[in-house]
Length: 158
Image (cartoon, rainbow, N blue to C red):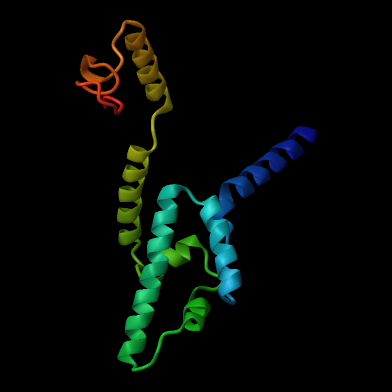
């Protein structure tokens, strides 16, 4: 019985831990609550999801502004906050893109950019070790030139 209880508890905890950002709701009663809630989302979302989320929020603002102009009225921050208050990540990214196609494309592009910008630490360590070995052999810069460039006039040689 104890094993069953532990197993159920473990599954329940794993479910809540993995929910994380998916269970979050945007609080947008006013600018202060929106700013605070946005900071929490930013802290919880991966870099790629932050891009998707931010772009979706911009799309909502643009669409709201265009709709208001068509109705010959102003789209205010209060209108915007009212529209997004209480929505979760998936609801935000699908509000102006019900198919989710734009969000998926943005996610893929952001994930590629994020991976390209994030160094592979193991490879960086290997590169550093190789640089140290070259330095010990008397080769201090790129392409065998001493640090400071070809003429030794300063710089890093890179």
